[in-house]
Length: 408
Image (cartoon, rainbow, N blue to C red; front, side):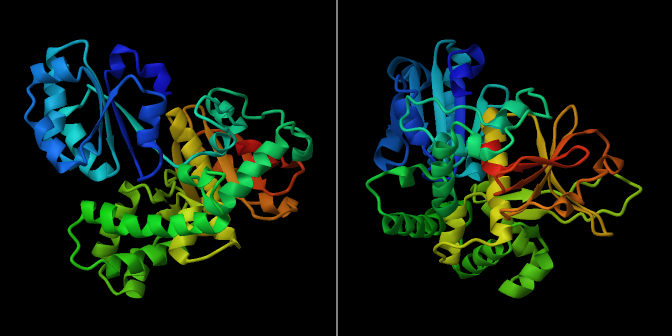
């Protein structure tokens, strides 16, 4: 997607935001190497850049990447001025803190920039071996780009010609998540767990302190741990507040921090059917299973809820990488019908039930049957995603598919 816009008029200012260590700097240095790289994290150099006029930006840095630009928001005004005065300047703005960066972007660069959210590596990206190795689109991404919702899946994942490669990526993803640093083959498993532990500590000490001036991090740490234990569950701020010992308002603020710093995804409840009693509480999902394990200080083993979050996160990241115009929801009725994930497109919905099982049963499809009676658009296809290798039709419009065949 970056290559598709970087040389166009609309791509004169590109803004990349994402969690720390997702590869923003590496992207610039490997794919966009013709941009002069400027680190705004250096406080001495930062002051020099702030003093430049638009004419000096045009003369000295007509094509530049400004990393950690949220450290000095005044630079965004400088870039805006250079953009408005000169047609041939191009800039990349990179930042880890979405909250600090995007507020200034919305004020100053509205209509002048293209925004990209960057996430940990997806399964197709984990299957590559270098920056020059272009990831293939997963079946899910093909569907989002206009493929047939009733895709002709192989009868078994066992005969997928890319199964071995996909499985290797999947096993890494399940154990360590998708952060690029962890694919280094020289690292041992102990090294990877140590890196993840350090990542969580650095996130607390740097990103969280950037988002809010905490005098005491302990309440946030407790909330972070409680949310990790509650991944893939409905978020009840009052219950969390009682568990952590803070107010519901503080819980909501902390949940916002986790979201804007790309640690969690808050999945809203679908609620457009006025004739049906639907729950309105959102569900929270951790966006990286490796980070989740580090927060919980676990090594190996996975609950069904953690598996659900891992799959929802992958579906979400792959859609975001395409900048697909889709919306993500969960659905739960008061009489017990529950859908783990609804992905809304212009044409209709993809519905997902996510099971960690190796053997799918027809009963696993029960919440997906007759789903259209609740919704305001047609169901393009309903899937039960699991570790079962066999593809089978469980009910009319409900297909059981191996999760790695769909996403790998």
